[in-house]
Length: 201
Image (tube, rainbow, N blue to C red):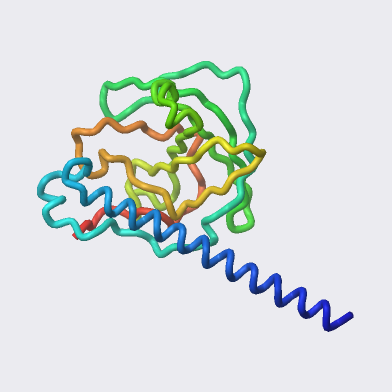
């Protein structure tokens, strides 16, 4: 009986390590793809000078503590609203869901929004936008906050990977119009994961 118990513990330990390794690999693959897209002279948000010297985005070290399972609660009865941007542009968003999660022994929540123009594109019909601010802003990350993208889950939960947090395009180039994270999406904790600011080369 004791032998079987030890085997069970060993299996759980091996499974946990394998799962963690898979999560790290996935986050690193995403970051490599992000670097690749920023180095593309046709689609990059970087200025010509920054693009010429670009060697990769500065990332926090991938940390599985910032990969969390979030409870997904769809919010009913909402009406589209104008989300402020860094310019005069006034995009319409719908507050779509509340995402609750545990991070470092505390419970937090972020709201996910649905872009009412983007949702007309079949490729983005299940796309949700999570703009947020946290205590790392203006210290080690962009002062204006960062973004996450998720897809509407089929069940009542999803995985939030803050290692995939990225900066608004206007962090690199003022010609872009970027949504300003709503106050309700301010996290009272430093999210030391994802893209830092700014040292591109």
